[in-house]
Image 1 (cartoon, rainbow, N blue to C red):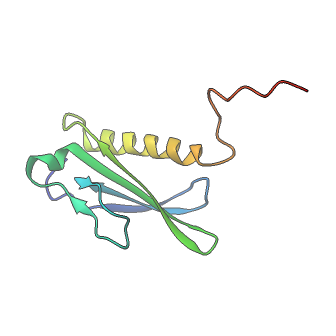
Image 2 (cartoon, rainbow, N blue to C red):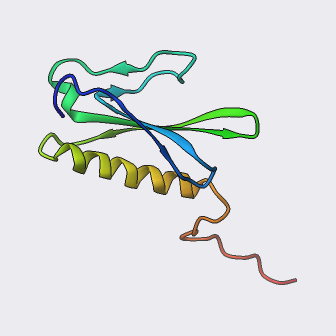
Length: 111
């Protein structure tokens, strides 16, 4: 990703309703925002990670769903963002009761 690329923000639909999504190039793991600042990689490492967060109201609580992903600098910015959104969409869906479940545990035998 290009150095100095600013985070982007947009509204996106999701299983928990409308959410504010932000894409952060070079973001690395940190304690939870907003109780701690986000951390960014330094130097050449900035091109190897991409943070994606989605903020949504669940009841009266603001919840952040966040992933930090390794991305290859050989991918275009658009490819990196599309990849991050694909992974986040799967993550979100897996947290809902509507999620398709693979490898479901076997049902106990009838008594």
